[in-house]
Amino acid sequence: FLFPALGGLLYGYDIGATSGASVSLE
Image 1 (cartoon, rainbow, N blue to C red):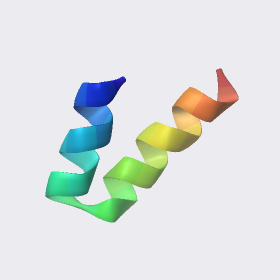
Image 2: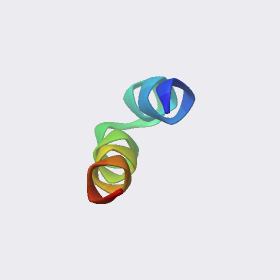
Image 3: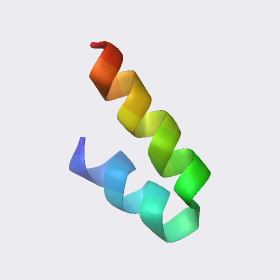
Image 4: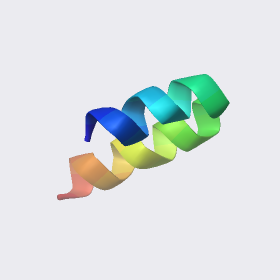
């Protein structure tokens, strides 16, 4: 999940938060 996390920070905090939320749900 490092790719979506880093990508989220680079492209936007919103995307990173969404990715983190998905990982947390799992």
